[in-house]
Length: 100
Image 1 (cartoon, rainbow, N blue to C red):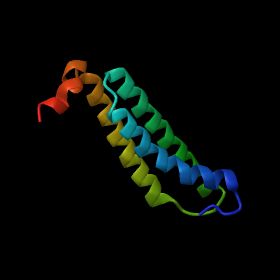
Image 2 (image 1 turned 90 degrees about the vertical axis):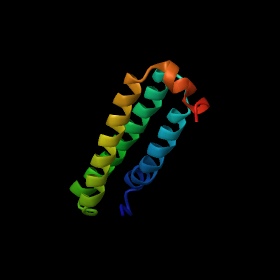
Image 3 (image 1 turned 180 degrees about the vertical axis):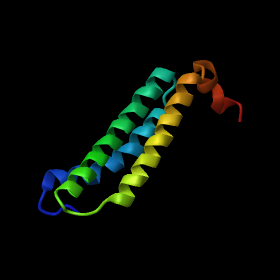
Image 4 (image 1 turned 90 degrees about the horizontal axis):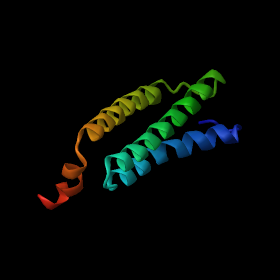
């Protein structure tokens, strides 16, 4: 997508991989604070990806409209999950796996 611009290509390729990785790591954390930390890192990785796509567009490498729309949707889902996590008590989230 961004051949000729190594840093931009690397950011556009690695950023999206970091989003689900950090989300998964946060999911297994026991406290709300730990979960929120990793979900926030996932949000930051998504922001990095969006920036690379916008910069690539501005430099006229490609038109990433569909990818940017997907990133916005993923961002909304991460925001909702983060809000839900912060509202859930540590006790319920810590022992949820034992009830099912």
